[in-house]
Image 1 (spheres, rainbow, N blue to C red):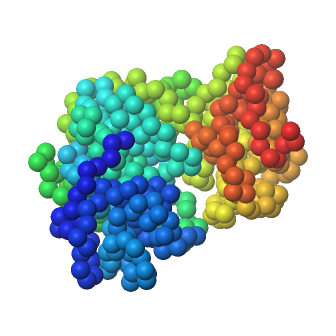
Image 2: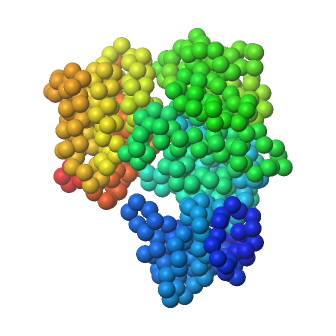
Image 3: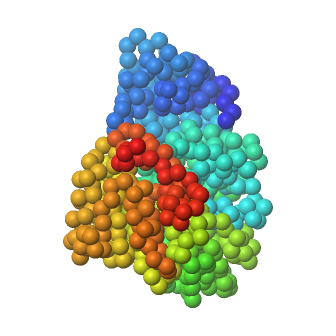
Length: 522
């Protein structure tokens, strides 16, 4: 991506809401970062104290790499050897606004659509992107899968949610240079809480749902809700744009977050529902193995919506996308509905893997109790046979969720196989023991309706070997992700590759090799 030009610090600070202390150094900077390893000559380095690292410990390294300015919210260290700006503000906020200013505030030149929620963010963002693209709107997207700028797809890395603020602003600047007029930015609770999405100047805020997730980080559901709510609240502060300011919130009326979010939304917010009447609502829902369809009531008219994105929960995602594009962006309803029918499957979201087997095999990203229950409900509705579910629970994450998911699986699947899923530095055996105890508390009997298979590849193999004609095997929790973390090492892993490898072995046909994890001997 193109590097910004040098700009005078005092000019940049005059344009952004960052509170400084003392004199402003007479210095020019080119870009900004909080990662000392990414510093290039002429950059500003913002020293941020995080959970595990303190940026002040890396100031010397940043200066060695050519940092022209150090920014911090503490007094300057002695014998610094570089210009220093002390701020009386959140350094993450300063990082985001300086990144936007060095890039000439690209979000002010774009119609910015933010999408947040516990489940369905990537699917909804992809639906909005597809509708706009089909309508001829030049639209970029930054999601957990990748960043799309025109025909260019940029990998945003392993286990990435919302990128850091300098990366967001760099992507937005590239979109402006490429002639984009709109951008969809998938916004996670971590990204919102850590100010990564600040300075993104949102015009439309879309919320899918807010269920149990990330409470290990946020503390409780209310704080998690408030973190998600920052996207909606940010609409009030969006800079005035020459293209106008919709300041529109699109909210899920079926979700328990609705009451709080409507209170903090600017006037004119829209609600959507698949259960009750709302600004957009659905009825006559039909869900088959190949297609989801329903009647959508929008703007006093009714349209039959069809989508290859199966699953009852995708009705809500479709409604959110239609509200955004039709009500928020003025795309004709007929055109938006027609576009949804041609939506390609989102990677790792109820993605079918078919090598000619006589049962259904699916990979899905569901990694929360709500999403897992919804995925299993969908799976049960697609077949008359058994549902065999394979999933794990991440280490160093919410332990309550770890217990909730096996309980949902015992209720929703005929056979559950508990396995590895990013154990990190936790004991995998201990994680599986926690999950097994939860399964037993819900009526599970080990060896009958649930198993423990530590190696994820072997777990998928076991599921496939136990599947009979008309059954459904679903591997949950990893979806599109390309790695799995053991201790501090990321090992190459893709559930879709693993599913194809296991199916190929089972069928005796050519296929990929099963990826290796340290739970299996070489």
